[in-house]
Image (cartoon, rainbow, N blue to C red):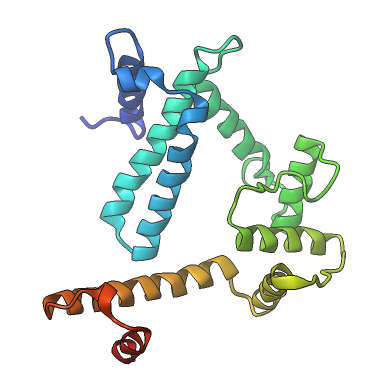
Length: 224
């Protein structure tokens, strides 16, 4: 007999409880929501990179690390003055999914799902602006694209701005008009540069040459 889907998640919660409880891991015992913030972003980016690489085995591991962060933060929350647990996180998620999919759970028409989704979120959050809820901590190109999209929902203009920042803003406008994700496009180019640079470094080292000794002209010749 096999475990029901999700049964091993209970094991994750139990292990985290052991690590955080007296007699557990000293490092885990010292952590706070604040101290864990960098890891939350780092693990999410590593899972993102596994998807970019098409490495499903690595994605499996990285998603486990993302799950660890979720369980860790939920475990910390149980110790607060107004505690909540992983069960509350899961219950809130289930309620949200059901509420935001009336076409699935209530049999309502599935017309214009984007507009329906946004209307439901607006009612839930009581937001005063379409820009509310846009995380400002995300990469700048993704942030610009998200804000432009939100403004266009109202029919607001996408103005131009001066300086380098204005040029990047205009580039995001162009990317969106062409139906491409500016963040993904730049990441693709950056990854291509990384791969080429690493390969050339390897070639130079194999030839007994220190890459740091090449002149700009020599680098250009090798790159070409």
